[in-house]
Image 1 (cartoon, rainbow, N blue to C red):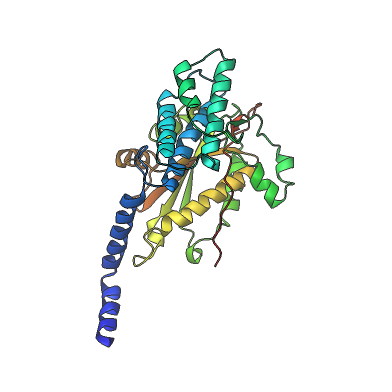
Image 2: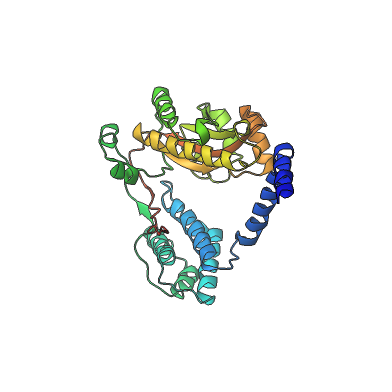
Length: 324
């Protein structure tokens, strides 16, 4: 036992990369085993994620001020296919995410009908789905809030009053308010207070346009941004032995703090995925001078609130914590 103990200690001390490689390989194995691919799902939790993903893309289209009748045919097909497969696999239609998807589909039909667009084939396909809408899907007509009002709120009301915005006024964002928000976000907890993150604030329209060309989720509204924040994590701040993923945890918490701090400063915002292809990541890093030691975690589109604050409802399911 002692020999094995000392052997493991020597291995840990002199060959830490072996342990981290083992951990990474195990994670990659589990990721391939349990992650979904397209509309293919192996259990109810995957279906929940896939159906929620696709109905939210429809919600976003419903929230566009320049509404386009009959939009999203491809994503609607993905959503309906996922819902049809979910039912055919024997899962219950009396669950929150499925009923919310039905609610989004109903909102889609109603809004298109108001614009004089009716798709009989689509309507027939929707009609075949079992279950009833829960009225939790669709849009919120006005998510705007004033600076004085937001700064008076208690924590619960503050959190509930924040919404992701995809429309902004043409008025430039106050740089001082952005800096105040970033400074407030610096209070984010981090591993041993190492603060291994960086925010890059892009106000130059041409640079922002080039960066957004390499991000996969801003089509239809990215052109309205008054600014863009790129949040990165710094690999130099983390321990080679155990902390292979800690950079994403710390920088991800920092990104959430930025979103809340922007809300406190009455700056409208929307989080955007930092999950890029290798080519996209290389392009963004070259554009912004991001070093190899940094990883991109999130983008945040920012601007001033528009006159009409139409946005997605994005209703949350009831939390289900596990107590021990």
